[in-house]
Amino acid sequence: MKYRIDLDKDELESLQKLLSKIKHNSKPETKTLLGKIAKPTEINESEKKVRAIATATRHRSKKAQEKIANAVNILRMENKKFTHYNIAKMAEVSFNTCRKYISDEYLNTLNENM
Figure 1: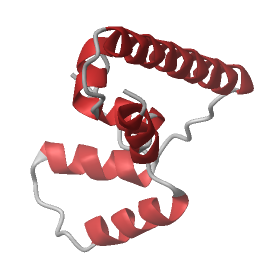
Figure 2: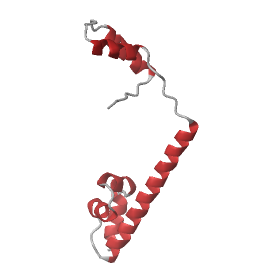
Figure 3: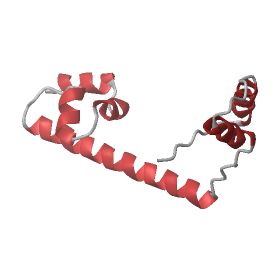
């Protein structure tokens, strides 16, 4: 399994300075690691990839908002109390996602109109 760390230029330079202070020991793993850090490869994200990521994010957000709106309507029909927990559970989204799209003020408004 391989791992990747995304660093900006300043973070890379700081890491290189820190690792240059480490004494080179005879372990091949250490030499390989230092060699990789000495010659990093740049990661260039294409415009196409960036647009695809943005589109996918918008789609996921829209789908979550639709689920939350449906859950609110179902809870309204069942005359249940509106809480972030109840809405998230009914919508099958995370609690944090529910809090992102439903403010506390809106919850209070929903509960007052019951």
